[in-house]
Each structure stands twice: as structure tokens, then as C-alpha cells.
Image 1: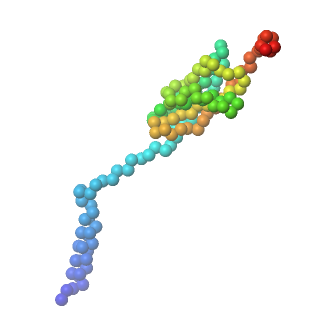
Image 2 (image 1 turned 60 degrees about the horizontal axis):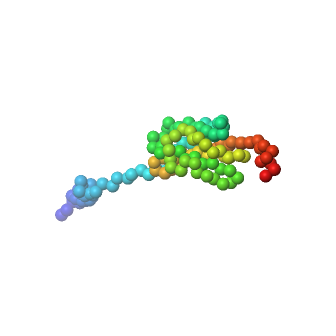
Image 3 (image 1 turned 45 degrees about the vertical axis):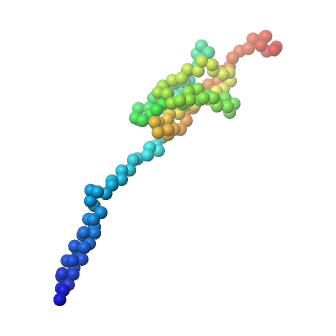
Length: 138
């Protein structure tokens, strides 16, 4: 007759062998590759200087984003946005050689190598140019 002790021992062996059957080296290993969804830092300390009919937009480059691809620069005037730097560039300033009269908003944002974009940093520039009498009469 089979004892209870033998039945329990047999059941433990079966359970143990079932548990370890899936742990052989023949099974493929699944490696999870993390996906970068974090945006880079917003450009800091944005400023604009206007001298000699040229506007220079400056900002501090990020030191915390090792995967930074660069910065995009746009100019907005009366709701119309013009791209000044359309491909991410590792620059810390942009010189607008043709700034427009009136008020323009310069926008700068950073982009990482994955394509994540930061929030936009903006600075305003208002250019008031004097007109001579002949321009006013035309």
C-alpha cells in the first residue's frame, strides 16, 4: 500500500520539475528597450539685443540633456510664424539680419535625438523706425 508520505514526496517532485521546466537556457530572452519620452529642458535665460538693424536672440545651452539634438528658432508677428532655424542646431544664439518693424516674438525650443520637444521659451522685440516725410506722403 502507498503511504501518504510517498504521495506527498511524488507530488513535490512533479511540481518542482514543472516549475523548472521553463527555466532552461534554450528559451529566448526578451529584452525591453526603454523608449525616451521625456522632453529636453526649456532654453533658459532667453534675451534679445537689437543693434545696427540686427536682432540677436541669446539663450543658455542645456547642460542636463546628453541626448540634445539642438534648438529650433521661430519668429512670430501678427499671428504668422516664420521658421528661422528649422533643423535642430547646437547653437546658443541666432542673429536675425532682417528683423521686422513692429513687435515680433522670438520662440526657441530644444529637441532631443528622439524628437521630443521642450516647452517654448519666448522673448519679445519691438522695433520702432522713424519715417522721413517723403515716406509718409507715398
